[in-house]
Image 1 (cartoon, rainbow, N blue to C red):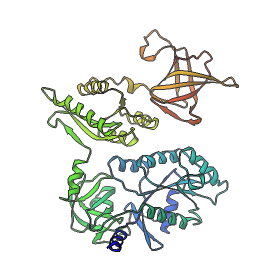
Image 2 (cartoon, one colour):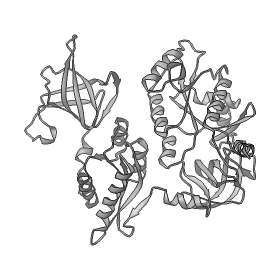
Image 3 (cartoon, rainbow, N blue to C red):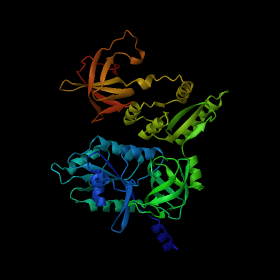
Image 4 (spheres, rainbow, N blue to C red):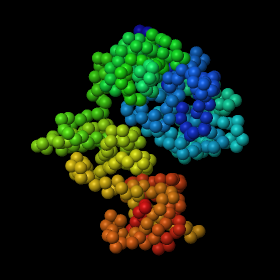
Length: 496
């Protein structure tokens, strides 16, 4: 009996699904080319590549599926819609350049997705390659590889010469075996949409990777509320196939509408399809109303989340004449992230949090996307603001503040420079931002009040590290240029 169960379990272990992320020009495509052992770029320029956004290889008799499409935005979009496409993320860093802005961006996306990482230090053949420096820089981003006392696997390679590529594949297989990834061919169908488009000749074309169950020609499926009968299935090499099992990438024809990237394709009428509707995170309170306010709601705990949702529901239903509705695009626990902002932007909504942080990167994205993001400490403030939002009278005062900080401490260096210890009250402080200095809160200024001084932010420090941006509710050290020698505690910096 024991052996039978073990064999069944082993039979259901599926191939890992891997995506590659990192800074532009650090060799993501080159690594994929080297793995695929074809020149993908040349073929694509010739227009003859069958491109379904993913492909599968065999290494030492074991399959690995690679997603070759998602940049950081697509990766976030998949997370935002609840789809987990990749099991493992390969983070590519060039040995001669080290950690760059997009590397940091990739790391934040990977951490938010809680995806296992393999660090691929590429271009070790180039002059100036320094793997040790790369590992040191990664450690500053809290990515610790094994030989630096961490848990992350790291591989040094050159996509150009092919050195280390097999080692990377070995690492992927090793990590996938540790993860013990399961997919039952006879189980409920669950596939993730990785690309979808409208083709003039073919109609709606959907690329997906099966995570569980088996997708067959003629199956009736649903995704994003759209139903389809699978009219055609083709693999990553363009061959027509009759079915696809766990970890297989395929292209489907048969949808009448384009489903969302990251959504699940499920069998029509399955229990999973019922659950997907319940867990789609989109709930509407007051459905018959003429006006709908779209909300992404985050709270510190599940209990608090339900309480806040209940209070907001009461706000809508207690009205004698319900002229508005609340549409919850997504509700969840934990600090706000980029996905929340992207969901709100797509749904023309707002992001509201209760007792959660708004990280600097989220503040930055919200500002550039024009999305209102707020977090509250009391339920009364939250309800009051949502009420104003519903009535159309919500003030955008704080959302219009580019950056406001209060001086809490001063540090005079031997060089004569003054580091201003600040707490950011609204918006964000950014390097090179122009600021005005006031001796009272800018929220209380009158037309007669003039700034004491104008300057630019020369440098920002968070702890001991330099940073480019510091968001609301965070403390930082600020170095101004030119310096204002009369700066004092309780003064304020206002970004212009």
